[in-house]
Structure formats: C-alpha cells, structure tokens
Image 1 (tube, helix red, strand yellow):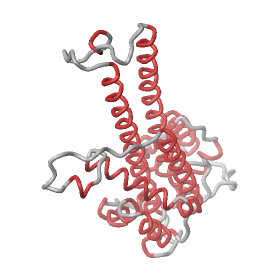
Image 2: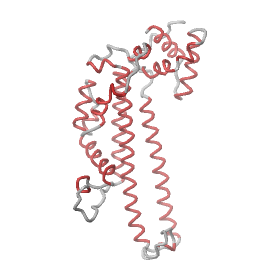
Image 3: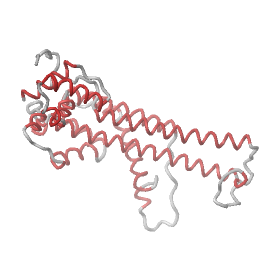
Image 4: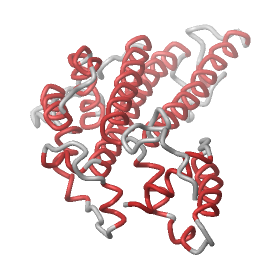
Length: 299
C-alpha cells in the first residue's frame, strides 16, 4: 500500500480532543437538558398559580398536590419548593463533580496506557500500542494508586501530583485551585451529609439537624464553567504530550480480528475508515487510515 502519510505522527493528534472529553461533554449536555426541563416545570407552576388567582395565604391543596395535607398554604409550599430548588442545585454540583472525576480517571489511564514510559519518568520511550500488539494487557492495579492521587484528596495535593507525573500543568488548574477546593468541600457535604457540615452531622449529641448549605444559581454556573475550562485545558495538554493518535490506533488494534481477514492493506484502510467513522461519528481521511494501518504493521 502507498506510504502517502508522512504528515501524520504517533504523538501529534489528528483530532483535537480525546474520546473521554467527548463523553464529558455528553454528560454535561445531558445535565443541562435535565436542568432545563426542571426549570421549565418550575416556571410553569408559578405562572399557573398566578393565572389561577392563588394568593400566599390560600390553601395549597386547592391548587396543588399536597398528599392530603390540608393545612399548608401556598407560602408554606413555596418555601419548601425553594428548599427543594437549592437541594436540586447542590445535586447538580454533585453530578458535575462526578462526571469530572470520571473524566479525570479515564484521561489519566488513557495517558498512561498510551505513554507508559511516564511510569518511569521517560516520556515517549515506550509506545503503548506496541505493548498491546505484543499481547500485554494493562490491569487496573497498574495505575490505581496514581489515578487516585489525581482524583482524591485536596486540590493542592492533586495538582502537585499531576505536575510531578506529567512534568507540566495547565495554568487554569493553578488559577482555579482555591475555587476547585471550595467546590470539592461542598461536593463532599452533599455526598456525605445531605448538604450539611460533615463533622457536625456526625455528632451523636445532636437533637436537631443543621441547615443545608446554600448554592446560588450564579455560583453553580461559575463552577460548571470552571470545570469545563479545566477539563478542556487538561485534555489539550495530555492529547498533545502523551496521547497523540493512540485512540484510533487502539481502535484498529481492538478490532483487528475483523480487519485481518481482508485481502490487503488497501481493503483494511477502507474498512477502518467506514468502521471508525460509524462508531465514533468523527471523520477520518483515507490518508490517515492508511497511516494507521501502516504504522500498526510496522510496530
């Protein structure tokens, strides 16, 4: 097959973003759709109450479902709904934290498998795809502790460890460090103490619950925007320094059993182009797919 593919490089990605970053954006879009539906229902309910002539002192049971509680007023219901609205927002923050940590785990594991020389401080000294071709299979235990050091603990220690492993760090991680730590602490309160102070909530002498943390819409949106920025910057750094074209090469390796039986590399190139385009919904040129086949053959 022709070797017309000198413009491609193992360590220079043909596509800007990683597949874990695409997944991150899909989670983000899903959350936004859910929040939009909830916000629409919220606004419609208050609009309907107004059009029906409801006043703050009216019995809520005359306008809303109250589980047969005939005593609560529209004001009582609204106060509880505002509490629920805050609780929803706190859990939106928990969701953002969850899919951000999912992304971190995936992208760091991907970086190690692509560039395993990182484990011994020798960037690009070992091509991870060659290890796969030679039959090596990475285990979760190979990177477990390193991934935990990047995804657990306070952000000062996380940033320090990420920098020590990869030799550099996005400036946004440094500039947002204090805000990331505030978000982490709030996320822990939501996840472990129903939105309250964790230590106070575990005090066995308590006879009444403490108030829930308050999260304003503007603060949540600030955190969501910050996570999007940090994720994009980290993705760019790791794609260009450690991942490169590992993902399409790994796709070819992972599906090689279906390509191997074809008559020649030209047919493999065409089959790869169709298959990877269908499965990833990304466009890969014939020249790039030809390069993938040749590169894999020559490992």
